[in-house]
Length: 189
Image (tube, rainbow, N blue to C red):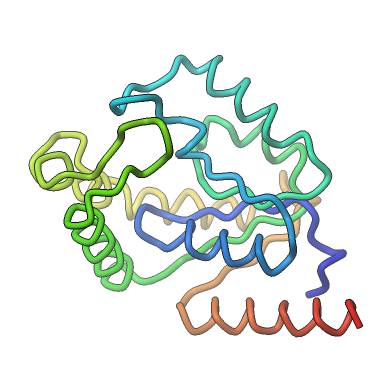
């Protein structure tokens, strides 16, 4: 896949699939801006914005010619997929995704680092494991539903104008990025 074939990319996948890590690496490889939807969405102290406020932030963020957009937020599909030329779905197994999510959540809880600058949003033991808004609970509740939704999306003729790439393992993700880096290096020479 050549760099010129991908200008505006949306990386999707269920919670814990590694969207942020993959998206950041992809954006760095291509030299594109990296946009994280969670950072656009979450306000200080885990407050949720009004839908219109979130949509306005997203619209402003995706005005550029090239970018890598990390995130789902299905209610924004109509807006973002008017602009994207490529959707990359990280579709890892249930066990792999759960393992990655648990590892990430535990590390973030231990490190106590603010997730997005200026938000004072931290993952804590209580929020991550004992709350109704737990990311772990979210995973158990939506993993299957999200997979079905994304599977339908990947087959939908409604989005035939968008290149759709499904990556099913970390090894495949690594190979995709490695091949892309090679193509970028060759084209830069």
